[in-house]
Length: 138
Image 1 (cartoon, rainbow, N blue to C red):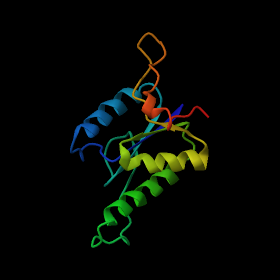
Image 2: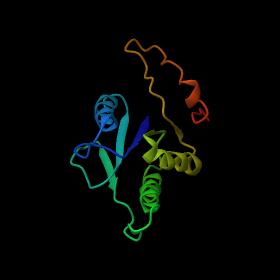
Image 3: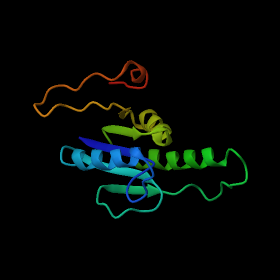
């Protein structure tokens, strides 16, 4: 199974708990699936990182909404890079639009589901009720 993990933070550019979480999540998943990390910012040295993306330079910094547009520009690049992934995991809101586009473009299974199969192979816990609207097995 080819899994694409989309994230704003990935070492060494980590500024909070989400970055720490995705670092350990990617390390553990890489032994179970064909994992590629796609992140914001400059290229990383980790072999798990398949691509890193900078915002479009054409978007300025003077307007209040430019930060949101820059985030969306990275999401567009990410969505274009994950073609062929069987599962696209978006980690935090920064990358959610990229996951949404991947689902529309490639019919990839997308979502955020914190439950993983147990060590004994048991099924993971179902996603929380709030997450079921975004999660789909289609």
